[in-house]
Each structure stands twice: as structure tokens, then as C-alpha cells.
Length: 229
Image 1: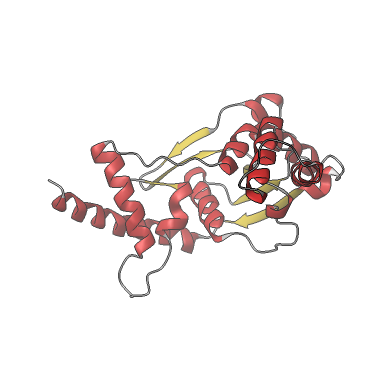
Image 2 (image 1 turned 90 degrees about the vertical axis):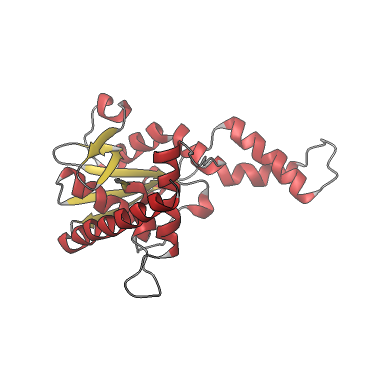
């Protein structure tokens, strides 16, 4: 049993009771057991992740332009690279000899970290996992603020009409349209402020803690096997 790097933030949460796994960790291991052993995969989709998938390459291109990564067309538009070791697995957005980076596409201006100086802990663990997998000494976590695809904007306009009027009959309110579009189009902003970059340094103590937590999670996984025979 191996843990996805994107899920390390879940298993690395600490329990209130010393010496036990947190409930968040246990819940994830149960989901992983059902997926691995019984083929029951928990489906997850949201409009936020949908946008991230659809604008991923555009985000990488903008980050490349602003941060001067020097990536080639093939590196920007290629498939995610798959990695695996004895403990974890992961798919990196950008992994070259000199650059390890993960690019996040914010849903709208309200969710973009304009002023946040601290890295979201779940993403810190994800990138620590990537460094564990690839041997890199540092990783870059990069947020990009990209225009939302037009069909998704139209969905949001309809959603906002329904939100403000449960008996909406289809007549569009220009103020609602203007408001929604202002939340999803950022062409008036310079690219430089639409890219937020964090550098995360490799930490061997944290990597060792990942190994220990994976081993503890494996023991819990075995317990689940004894319950479902």
C-alpha cells in the first residue's frame, strides 16, 4: 500500500490522542482500502477542479513567462510525469533536472492568495512528497489566476441568478452578469500579479516523518483487512 503525494496532507494530520492515527488519516486509509481491494473508488468532481484541469497548460505557460523558468513547448504541454518509491506515488506538473514545480489555478480572484505568505500545509506536504520522489532539494508551489472558460462563466451567471431569485424565469440581470464576469476575467490585471510563487525547501526530518506515517498507515490497512474478509 502506497500513498499518493496529493493525499499526504490527510495522513500527516496529527491525532489529539498521542500514538494514534487521526480520524482524517483513518478515513483516507479506509477509502484507499475500498479502492484497492474492492474497486470502490470515491468519485470527486467540482467546478473548481474542472477549471484547474482545463486551464492547466495556460497556467503553466503564464508561470513560465512571469518566472522565467525557460521551459520548452514540449515541457509545458507534455503529460504529467509519474513517480513512485517504496512509500508514495505522485504525478508532477513540471519536473526537470533543475526545476520541480506544481501549478495551482485559482477559481477566482477571491481565492487567489494575493497576500498569503504562508504555504497551505496540505500543499507543503504534497511538494515534500514530490521532493522525496524525485530527489530535488527545493520545489515551487505556484498559483495562477487565469480567466475562467466562457461556458463555465455562463453556468456561473445562471447559478447566481438562481441564487438571488429561486423563481428566476430566465430574464438576465445586467448587474449580475457584470458581477460574475468581474469575478472570472482578469485581463485588466498585469500577469506579474496573477502569479504567486512559493519556494519549499527539502526537509529530511519531514520526509522521515512521511515514511513513519506511511508505515503506521499500513498497519491500520492490515487491520481493515481483518475486518473485511
